[in-house]
Length: 265
Image (cartoon, rainbow, N blue to C red):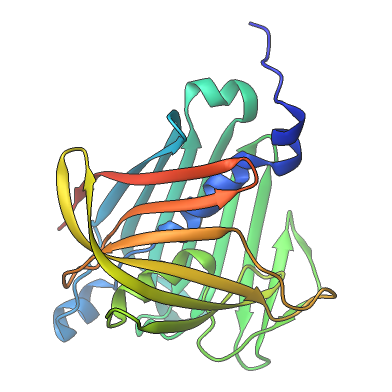
């Protein structure tokens, strides 16, 4: 079968990575087992969420996020969050992606200790990000090659852990959440505004939600502060604070991610 040709404007925008970035920022769920039981928190290993992605009316792919059992990193017990993303068969012909991300924050959810991202397809990646909290640095390691460390702040998280953190914060209309985030290459100041409370309907199910709009600016780099693509996230307005819908706006339009299934232990 002849491979479809991607229009030039889409090639320049790299729209599929933008979709998956949105999923990355959308995916974010939970605390760990015995801390959850001891402190009455809501999340335990076995929690699993599946999202469908669409570009306008065109199906684009799927993302699965899961809370996995504890791990131990450098002698420290950690939470373990995992996200897998993939394009569907149609988009595989244009831009195939199979990606897995793993996040390891401490069990108090106060900072990230370790983060990995592996993908195959158009742009293969094998990324490890280490966090040196004594030196206050994070190091990006791609295919075994370490780059110059970036400075981090207290309470810095990786992109996947970000949304788990948001779920642990109190949400109210007009509230602002401030969370530093790094992918190992740059430090981002994330200010998430709780814009309003509203109903959203997905697959015939009505959800009472808070609409949250993250605003992200670079804290380092030669260009200084830099705006990221617009994004909106709808979290359920209950104690679980599940992100049921995510919308991101890029140069070629909007991408939407909607929760289609959830399993809770």
